[in-house]
Image 1: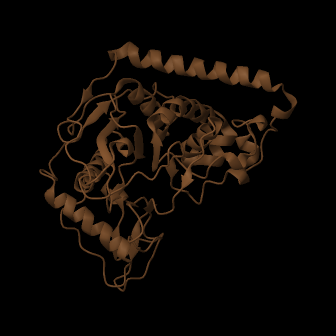
Image 2 (image 1 turned 30 degrees about the vertical axis):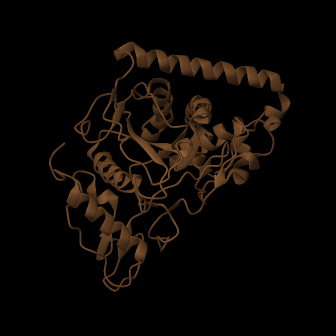
Length: 360
């Protein structure tokens, strides 16, 4: 997995490497920017902005804008609706620093949720550029949004459709030190040989690369404006490098954000309490977000059968073609509280979102 061509960075002039990197960035960036503007011009900001109420005592200087990247696929839509519902529920409660909300829709055209969720439509990458890895559109979507949108808040939370806010989220960042969730499978020091292709030795040890992805992250808008183009460029270069693509797979874009941040000298405060991921995390009492990326499968006796379809299950992948129905059955006795809470929160959202099962 780690084998491949030898990195020749140590035998090349650092100034030449920097010159090449800068040239590659501007070539890629200008190409993509021209492509986006050539079709329709700048996209319009559609939606009301959800700026009505804030948490009790919230400091305006600490408020963050919630930015959610998404596609127009039904699978992405129903998750976005639930996520937006719980954002609205938690935004105005004491302890919240949540500001406005934007779904950054990188499908290139409006969809049926424009009146329900504040949305900015941006262009996807040119056809074939993502090589079937749709997440590669995320950094390019942020580049466009940051260029074109009016964002009132000084901070931004980068979030995903399968996030549910279980309690009001304060600004976990500290000044110029963003807050991020550490992922156990992002291991920069174990991938030094590959990462040196994108993080040259003159930048320091690869331990400067945080074990994170771009979400969830709370970061200053001014910092993200600098990081986002680099994140986009590094993502594209990683995807084009066969050894890197094979080694990082579906977490490639996460590594790209971590590298881009380190290239700009940005270090994140690692917050394990930022979110939990059922079924592995069992309780919600010390977290702010449930990330339901893993399937939850159990016997009717409450025993986990991960990797095998359970007698009772909740897995977002069961709903690729249609949204989950209202009033999902609750887990059997013995299932962890985190899973029970997740299903209850999904049920509450679907019960209160008008036209939940209507075609969009």
